[in-house]
Image (tube, rainbow, N blue to C red):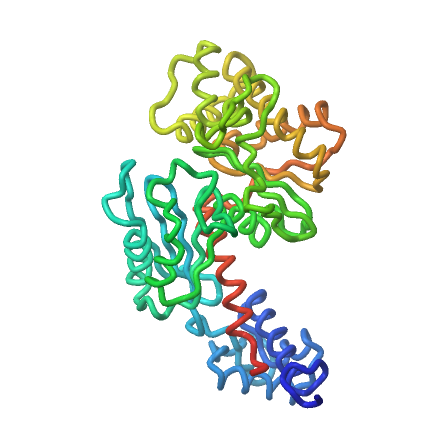
Length: 403
């Protein structure tokens, strides 16, 4: 039926498409004048003026100043109204929950970290989640109801059939079959759940080293090993959400690990996980191993090793590069990605030196020859990916003016 909101080509739909194009341009470029928006969208000056008036009335854009330094009268500059909507993200580990709130432009406006030490949580998971979210919301000067959408990143993945968390036995309190229902009842906004490494890939795809790449593998190593698989521009999650759990991958160089989900480890984790780096350092006679968690110790050792051109530290780096390439060879032989992104503190600490060694080894072990890069998103990458994921859906909903 002609004239309905959903009919392609109707004036309402065309206006909505132009509105979204203008909003995306403002997000990309920052404040723009009416004339500049018209040129970038191909709209006439009168149509661009009507568009901006419409968006301003809807609370989606606002005047932020005037252009300067050009002949003639200064033109008003328009920008996306940052208060149009807010989104939140959570990064969950066994030791803490890190939360943040971002405005619709992507600027983080509030952060909070809730410690959650111990194998037996002092408080139920539902309370931990709401406490962490409320801490970030309070830091932003907002109320919980102001948050449009929340994305929670955890190790493992929630099985779409059972709703139970899998591949993350080390995350206490998160395995109740009714957990998702309890969280849905406690939180007033839509909530999505995503694997933590997948969220790092989203951050790298939108903000970092994987921008412009439709096919890439992200290899992550901090306390555990994981991978994210992006094929045709979309995350591949697998049937149960378990795609990318490469720590369980059997590889040469380690004994077979059986009942891997109970052990919460596997061949690749034992060969190249963070816990393997201090052990390898001791075997090579490096006695000044740092203290701290496995990830902290591995990162410090690999950073030190990258500064050496010979000796046991250089041997540590070369041996570790071979171990990383051993598992990567299986991934790239099957997936043939364009790009491999190395991420997580235990990989980024080795920097360009480690990357080059892994690249050289991978070219010896696999027929596929993807380009290896070190990830760009270093500060809270899981949380940044959660915010980006929440913002994508929030913008789709808030920026839709066809209603």
